[in-house]
Image 1 (cartoon, helix red, strand yellow):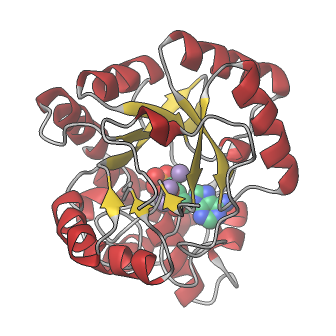
Image 2 (cartoon, helix red, strand yellow):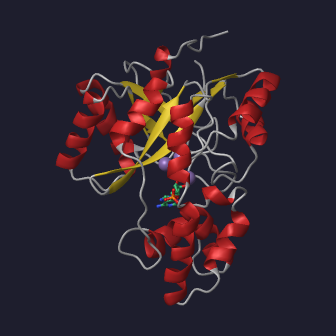
Length: 283
Ligand code: AMP
Ligand code: MN
Ligand code: MN
Ligand code: MN
């Protein structure tokens, strides 16, 4: 069976390894087919493509787009699109703009909570300042000894209602699906188990995603429990969507699951990769 990973990050956004190293690590761990899906940027894709060809593994273009739906921050993974598409690139540029300003405000908010120099500290972790992320702040707060790990930093400081959380204007669901589809790509709901939706809100979100032509749900995700897998298997079938599989790897020691180490897709679910223009096949 093919080992396929359609969700991971490099230091083009908030991962810790350069794109080519992510690909080499994936190949070394037995991944046959990969999509690098950095947040709101395509800058890692050319290097990832070269490395995938050198390593002899398959790949498609990928991106993880930050959107807001009914007040909740949701991530949509785009796959197998044209990376030169102008509307997609313009949309991503619009989402990126404002991240630095948000980070400055986060720095001020954290200073009021007694944590100095967080903006400067987080920026040191960001390879590309315009992709400054809460994940970079989390690494700095761990470095300062304020929390033991990044998950604890998020829970105590970086989620809505906590002192370092600052709102941001992300993209909308409809425009995001338009950008992905106009660029010839496929849209997948990233790590659906992560969102603070009530079951009614989740259903409304899935209704909207389906109505707008969304194609897939990440059933197997590095952050999912067995209950999540069962629940999203049922929902994938109910909505007649396809299933995706992605680790959400951010670097060694940064994620729940390493590249190559995910469970297989549950039996009987149509895989999202069957929709690719050149679907991966057993060699
Ligand atoms: P941002 O795009 O700046 O809002 O940051 C979101 C990123 O923070 C995500 O892509 C994850 O890498 C990370 N993240 C979000 N929630 C958590 C969490 N609870 N624990 C650890 N990392 C998280
Ligand atoms: Mn991330
Ligand atoms: Mn995400
Ligand atoms: Mn991700």
